[in-house]
Length: 87
Image (cartoon, rainbow, N blue to C red; front, side, top):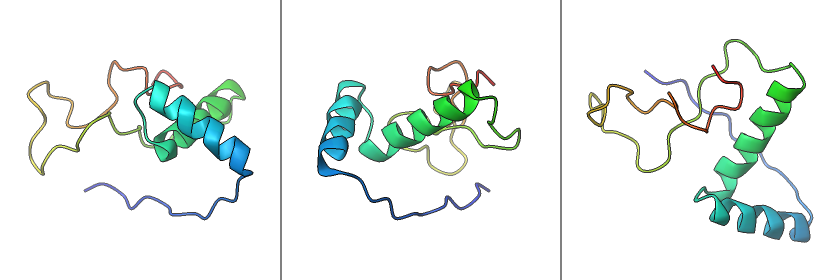
């Protein structure tokens, strides 16, 4: 069973939010996923990524319970560019 994801309120300058939204669209991510991607990359670059941090969800709709999409990855970022820590 997946752990519950933390929900936070983030206040951003509107221009920063607009820039993040455009960047996310360019990379086919939601704004939320783009922010998480950038935070994970910053943590990895700084050597501060927790060892127990879960992987980012793969793009697209989540697999139904018990389904893995046929590739055996069950919604993990295995082999994708989504995991900046390379784990």
